[in-house]
Amino acid sequence: MKTPVSDFPIAVSNVTFKTKDLGYVFGAGEYSGGDFGEYSGAIYYTVDCGKTWTGNNKIHEANVFRSTSFPTNETGYATSNNTLVKIKRK
Image (cartoon, rainbow, N blue to C red; front, side, top):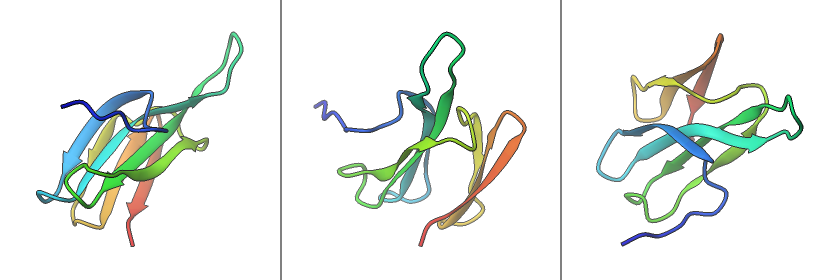
């Protein structure tokens, strides 16, 4: 069954589930527009096995996230070009 999610990443580049319920999605977010525009980064997480998602698709400090690592369930790292972002879920 397909269930569309509003304000989700435009293009998903990485999906990581730490437990059966806790998962993260990374990708491209909002496009700045114009001929030379850029995509912002997007990070979303779920705590209910993907039924609902919380996140942000307007992370302007980073472009598309390409690689991720989560040493713990609440703390992870993502790379976007030459930017390293620390993710800390409360």
